[in-house]
Length: 171
Image 1 (spheres, helix red, strand yellow):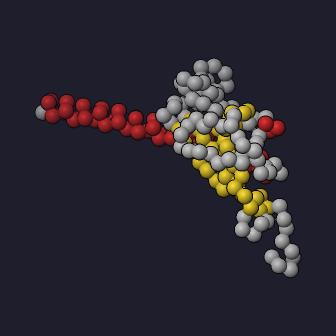
Image 2 (cartoon, helix red, strand yellow):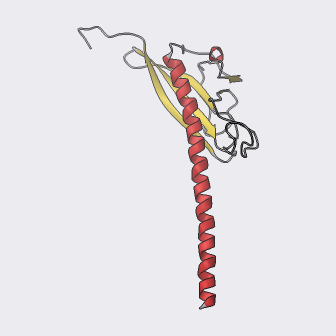
Image 3 (cartoon, one colour):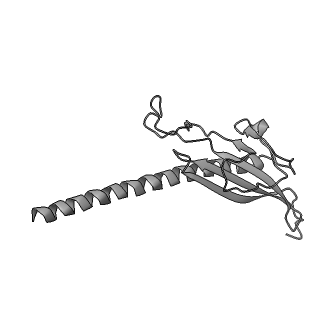
């Protein structure tokens, strides 16, 4: 009876360890997804402020926290799933701490929170006009990391900026 109880206890401990790993991986996935979403929304916000245009060939990394640095690219992003991108805007949202080794924040207001592995990135490419000719289409891509290089997410949206109003007699 003691041997059976010991085997049950050991299997429970193994199961608990597996559940902890699953929970940790889920947390990493959610953190990276939220970081990527924040970069994507920042890019959409920037476009909505009347910025954009047809863009230029993008080849470098820039600081996207400075609105004047933001740019629209005329060239499409080669392979969004391969991170980090050679050309991108790095965006650091407020209250996000980044340390290349990941880990945990040891001091300050965010003590005990996770250090993100890298800043979220965004890439805005001009796609052209929509079929009606009334909207400019952009592809906004955001990428984010969790606490390690293994926890990364990429999100994309197609964003339209309408610049011509239709006639009132022909909506």
